[in-house]
Length: 105
Image 1 (tube, helix red, strand yellow):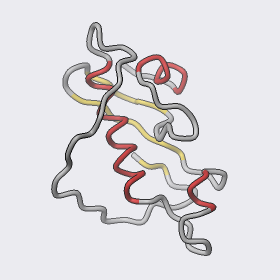
Image 2 (tube, rainbow, N blue to C red):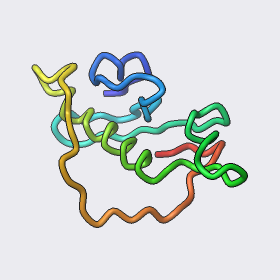
Image 3 (cartoon, rainbow, N blue to C red):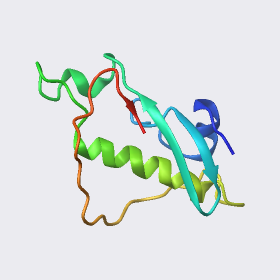
C-alpha cells in the first residue's frame, strides 16, 4: 500500500506542523512501512534550531520514524485514526545531520 499526504492524515492523528512525514511509499499492515519527508527552508524547526547551522533536531527525527512506523499498525483493520504513543526507545544512534533540502527517509 502507498499513502500520500492526505491518505496519511486519514490513518494517524498528527497534523501540520507536527506531521513529520510526507509520503509512505510502502506500507505492509502489521509488518513495516517506508517513506519520507522532503525538508525545505520553511520547516518551523530550521528557524530555531541552531541559527547559521540549521538542522532537524534529533528528537524530531525520532518522531518522524515513529510516525512512519505507526502506519504499519494504524493500517490494520479497526486501528485507523487511533492514537499511538512511543513509550520507550533504546540504542538510538543518529549518524548524519539532516538539513534543508534533504529527503529524510
